[in-house]
Length: 444
Image (cartoon, rainbow, N blue to C red):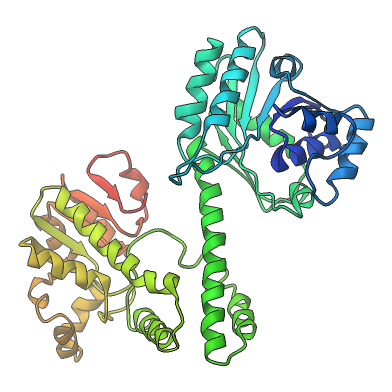
């Protein structure tokens, strides 16, 4: 059953895993698909009704669609463009010897499509499915299409990025049951067309700028690789301690509130407190005692310290000397200063001669009650820099570092006149500041 509004004529460039699967699956949804590849053998296999790659269910699907007249292949890109209204670019983007992205196939196909568009009338849409680093579409694909065609993107042709989330071995089922559909669009018309190709399939649809769509594939794959590495390190530690790692990980993954969830996955400042750092140090130390290598776990604390250093460098780069810090505890809603990264940042600023003033509503209250001695023990050098109100901090500051998003702090910040704002928490209403050169989001 077709859910799309119009059956399209689609040219799929590159008949490897992604291209072959995309071509056959789109054809099965009722579209007319032409596959294009420089390899004549792949083209001949498609035209014989055979899959050029081994993939569960793909052979039968290719045979069915070729027999139905909805799928064919050619080595002639100009012919394919002349007989289609959408190009789906699925060529390989391998690693170069130095680890950088090799975009030579992508560049060649962009030139070929552009040259073919030069003699074609009517709007055409180019959709890049190949994996590519952020800005590649705008800086490599787009100019080559325009130069070769003599036409303008958004006027004569559309442009979109549509990363694939297909796993080898289950890519056909992944196509029809995607975890999500991501559409990076140059304009709404391009995004509308791509969205229509997937109409009726499950999974949320995200329509975003081109570079965001490019980046999400790298974020996904990096996270998946990190998960595998983390699980293997936990398994190695568990084995060394005589534990069943699967029993441990079954419990870990059953927690969908903190572990398998959006929790802790928002860019911002460093972590701290009495638990995470202490427990991580202890586990790494125990692994080392057992002669177990855990490079991922060993790298977490240096990475965390690097985030503190990154914020310090941002403040330093402003050239301002009077700094206000809204927040000091290791997280909002507590007065716990143990191993707070904000304390580490504040001490670094003081050591480097910055004129610092701090306000944290919870810490300020603790300085007035029985916890005063404990607080002063935690921050013996900083207690004299703690102000009585956020307004006092904001009025003092040339640079205001926002590490607390409570209403009192944000209200004071909105009264600031001309100071640089360094946002560590993406505070409510921060969107009003974006685009202002005096606003610096630490990870956005």
